[in-house]
Amino acid sequence: MSGTAHAWFSMALQKQMEMKVYGHAGARVLVFPTRRGRFYEYERLGLVEAIQDKIDQGWLQLFCVDSIDAESLYSQSIPPSERIKRHIQYEHYILDEVLPYSETLNPDSFLIVHGCSFGAFHAVNIALRHPQRFRKVVAFSGRYDLSAPVSEFRGLFDEYYDDTIYYHTPNHFLPNLHDVHLLEELQKLHFVLTIGNTDPFLSSSLQLRAALDQKNISNEFYIWEGRAHEADSWQKMVQIYL
Image 1 (cartoon, rainbow, N blue to C red):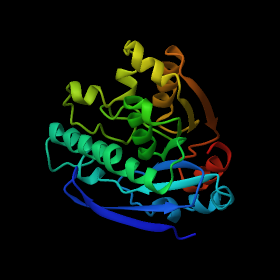
Image 2: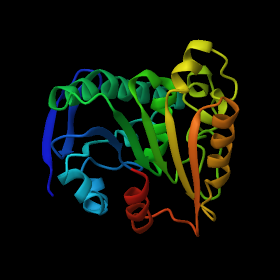
Image 3: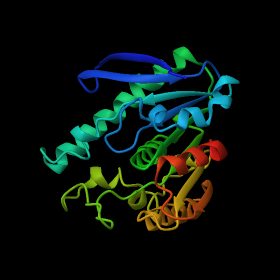
Image 4: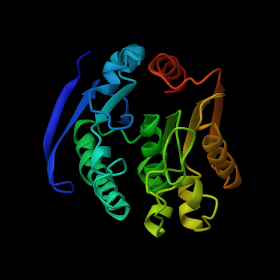
């Protein structure tokens, strides 16, 4: 399946943005790519093919978005404070442009947000911040604290930290969240998290799961054998969990 390409000039980002849609009906699935990934990556990694039957039968419709990670969280050409501001603009693009557009193509109210690796961060972060927009989160091999280095992966803010970064760091803000209204919305969500038992982000995922449990947020947590941080593993995961 090649999908249907869509593109427009984003007012939030002030640039042309592209997206691919797969399927014709069913639950809408917002799919974030991996680090610096493109809108066609999910297909390239064989993940569309892995769930082709669910797409063809009208159970799922995928909305695979582009990233701007190289301009935001993974940029080293702008200060950390500007990186997180650019990321917030990306969040506005998703919430104010992509999701409304997806509703014009498919009015199904059941919206899943999904991603692998860095896409898992995007999926979890936006759902925790805007739970009223989503119903389910499916995150594979994620890292949920970008501020601290992990194994060979650097911290993304060069030891800079402020309130804005705090509120975009799930493992920091969720354990301290006490807003009753927001917690009620979060408790309507269901999270599915996977991670390999030798993945360097295992500790990060365990921390997130503990915070979800602490806040009585519905979740399933699965530990896979090995690193399981690759397309072959994600193809198997997506058949089971999405």
